Amino acid sequence: MGDPVQSDRPALRVLVLEDDEDDFELLRREITRIGWSQTSTRVQSRDELIAALQARTYDLVISDWSMPGFDALGALSVLRERNVDLPFIIVSGTIGEEAAVRALKAGASDFVAKGNLQRLSAAILRELREVKTRNERRDAVEALRLAVKVRDEFLTLAGHELRTPLTTLRLQVQAIRRALGRGEPVDAMKERLLLIERGTHRLHELVDRLLDITQVAQQGIALERKPCDLSHIVKDVVARFVEAGAAAQFEVKAERPVTGNWDDVRLESVVTNLVSNALKYGQGRPVRIAVDDLGKEALLVVEDQGIGIARGDQERIFERFNRAASGRSYAGFGIGLWLVRQIAEAHGGTVTLKSEPAAGSTFTVQIPKG
Ligand code: ADP
Image: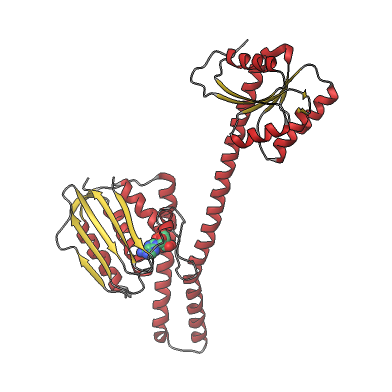
């Protein structure tokens, strides 16, 4: 009998309902004997119990069955009223079967006879283990609930994003069908076909992005490092935005090559995401992009003068599917910055943000040359 003494156990915080000083001492001695250090608080009435519950937290309650003016059933109802969920072990002389059933129904966890205190150790251990399992289960359920919520939000967002180019495609195809019905020459449809081509391209990009995100989330980023030039990547990305008719002016400072051993495709994705955000949230004002050589590290700064980001949102926007701007005004999946951070960190680097609402945002990426 008895568990080995475990000195690494944290002190057990026991709330004891007991009117008899000697019985309280016996209990304390038994808990010590079975290897627990303890802080025991003794109460004898409803008011004392309430005060003790307000004063601190406990690991378990050990209660006499009845005391003058108070009893275990009364204590159980105090705990219930206050939503306090603690193991409740009744230590008493013999109690009748009917009383035992009432106590169990009221939430008691176990009974230990005063004459058989050796059983207390097993009862305490079992109850604490059960609390631990219950807490773990509750945490797991909460994590799952959150994951399902995030997934649902994402599906809604993705649905809306994919719908926009699809609507364009459908309208254009319908228009072409009508024009063909009227016998119009195919030549007249070039403009519409171009729009269709652009629409399918956009859809393709979105789907690729979704697949990439899923892969990164499941497997992390496997970098394919090779020597490359960050200045070159930046100039390429900017040229592409200019070609696509970007609505803002660019000020690019990337004259000298800044080379490192990086995954160029991933770095291009970092630059594209930051620049596309600067355009999207930049209110048409100039976007500044600078590449710098810090010796052992390369520096990329993307700065806009747009809507900015409230302080309270500045950390969470780097989480997956988290957005600060309203979905109505600004479309997006809420994964760009998450990806930027994943890629920077996979390279051993960092991303930092400085922003003031209505004044603009500056994203700084620092990556070791590898
Ligand atoms: P998305 O732009 O698709 O929503 P991101 O992960 O790229 O996803 O950005 C997350 C959120 O961070 C955006 O929804 C927006 O609220 C905010 N954000 C990102 N970049 C900027 C920026 N340059 N200016 C203001 N807000 C930004």
